[in-house]
Image (cartoon, rainbow, N blue to C red; front, side, top):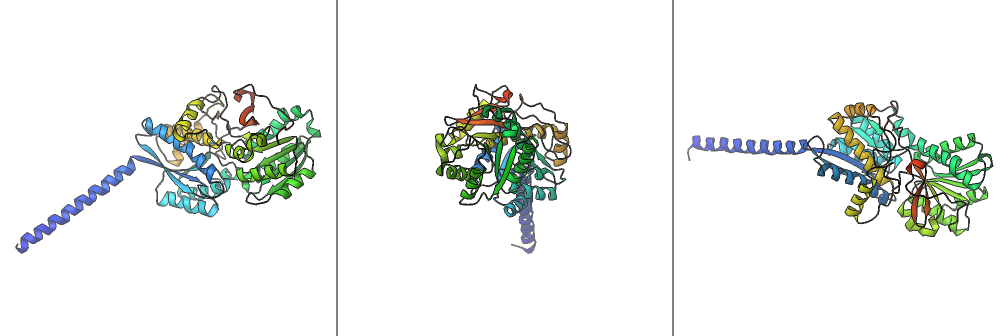
Length: 415
């Protein structure tokens, strides 16, 4: 082969490699352009792993539903999981989602202490952080314009707890508010502290006698909290915490034979507590809950379809209400992406600020939508009051959400 022929052949090979490379690159770019990536930050390991996985299932069901019906903006939606159990992991995982995975949006999370630092990284890069479950007030008090909380948060959760005591619990006990003694126990992170402080302040305004006791949710022994609470002889034992610490508190109270007239918790209507304590152990316990699965269809349209989808996919009943909130919150996000015709944080915020949906009658959570323009919190996302009855959770307040004829029964008869 002559020198000229060899040179021609080399040039042809180089050209072929270049064309193939460009073709693969173009194909890769094209593939990425056909996908909307949503990063989901949850505690997929550690003590809250079960709850993190369950909350993620809400995102998963909503994504499957939208993809089955044509996707968003002509694209399929893909979820990218990120495991974070503490602040440092939240920071590194949020960085990874944005810089490595190139997600369009981040959503989460079961744990407020994970959500708070993750929002700071999302703000650094201008990526939308869409919060469905974390409730600590300061998550949305950082002055960020890319952090939207569509789910309920600490202020309405505490407010509904106090209103429930005033409107339902005190009358059921036959006591006035000034006669009530309340012991508030709460885990000591921003989640429990923010709710506990509001409850204490509001109950004192109503004339109740209140003592507040913070505790470490990671503690292997909470008997000192139980004994301090018992010594106060309260009418109401009001708790804010997570599953593991709740099960430990209730077991240690039961072990010493202490049964206050009312036990009332934040989000204590989950299957994990039922598994830990049994039907009798949970009987009569009240919960300020994320929207419950027994709400009536008129108030929460689509809740029966959601339940059918969950059962068909996972072969069981939902274990925590946060799954429904994650599902409903993701549905609202998809509606806003359609309205904004974009995943850009600024455009979605603009569309969200215009959204005006009444409470009840639109989404399976019963939530309406109206953002506070300063904090970007949803002012129409409210919890419900539920009570454990024969191993099942029943919504008993407010009246418009109640789906059965269940009535509150006090004092506590379980244990």
